[in-house]
Figure: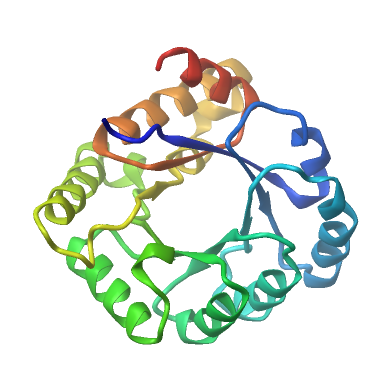
Length: 223
């Protein structure tokens, strides 16, 4: 039987207190480019968090190269650290290995690039069991079918014996829906998040990152 999908509720670190009692498998903390402010907020919040954690940088490779190693060392439990890319993984991987955390590796929507990054990262000493692949679905820009097909191919190749693709898939599809003009409507934004999450779940995502507690509850009810 396929393992149950894990839902990650991701909130800005400054507002993460709102998610302490919410229904999710993992609480995600999203940081900004203000490193000192983010670290201070994280230190204050950490003792009160009981759930497993995902700690994600701001998406700026330069900032994340400095921020993520610090977060990896500050964490008091095994966390998911994100996100490493081809531009900064060499600076981030050693701290993840040392701290015993797991790492999200993001590549453009391409199965070969995903495999290459997993190979390069594992060559540095990070076990494949500590890697999560993010195909950066970009579904609403490229067309959801294309992003869906790449996720499917990765899952199939992994099941067929390719050890470098036999790693969990994590999807930030809800992040893409939030960029649309339709998402300005609060109710429609929720529907878009649920629809995108349902699609990547069908494609084989093992971890799905959501931004709305209501979306987690509704998706739970569909299982």
